[in-house]
Image (cartoon, rainbow, N blue to C red; front, side, top):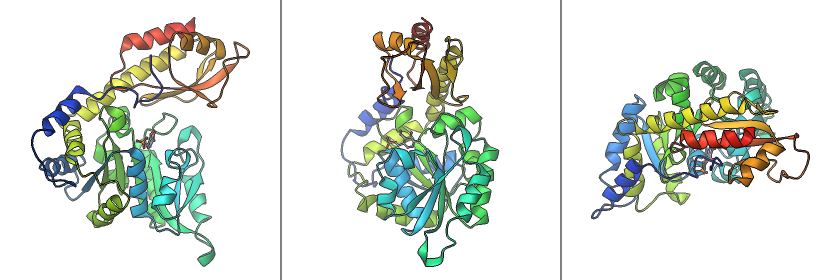
Length: 350
Ligand SMILES: Cc1ncc(COP(=O)(O)O)c(C=O)c1O
């Protein structure tokens, strides 16, 4: 009953097979393996973007930080939601890799920036001449950090604001596949067709061992990303193992099938939480991540039986009134089974 994160589960068998297969013999290093050209082609096909550049890294933080560093000057502001992963959970990597760009935080309910708030934040930035930071890129996360999803129209509304100031846009797609499955849209619709310039296309949380692709729709950005990846120590010498994972992930729709499974389990869990006495969902979840407020007594039963998931704040105590609610997060991965979801719900219901 591990619902702590979508990176607590195993890698998918198709990914492991691909890695084992890639282990045979010798391959040139640093992205010059024979698998990578096929990966680039498949991702271009997937995104309907024949010119796109594709760069593999092993973590979502590296993908975000290197992509933003490529899109921002050191003296820029980078616009993102107040609770963006890049702001809250990357230990300053975006600031570090951009050489000190300032993160400008934008408000909006349900983990989503509103176009009005973004416009206000951009207007308030870059109007102080040499004394203030300049206007830089906007980054949007889908699935959002609290498990909701921006619709395609909502993404377009934000990129329209960014474009009206001539700013570039990035999408943090650590849960890109879950968002596509939730919105029933194509990768192209969620990105360049909605005005996105670059994307961190996640694999690790969705059944890979550790691989994410930075995809830029304007190939002019490619060389700078290549240099930043090497200089930032994220160019793998045994790159073939990253290539092999991503190759399997984007073959025959595996990326989407795995996400659909995770989303189905999360939807079952979310429906069930609504029937736990005293519990409520923080927001209607769209993908594979649920935030809820659940009475302490229910948490105690579930955790005593071995359930693992995060409580917020992190030091929230299980000592206290049984009916007081504690905020919590559940994440389902591709391997989560329906029985485990029902077992957890049974414990929470008591
Ligand atoms: C929205 C989002 N972006 C990026 C990341 C970064 O991934 P990693 O932990 O691989 O650096 C995460 C991981 O939790 C995430 O949830």
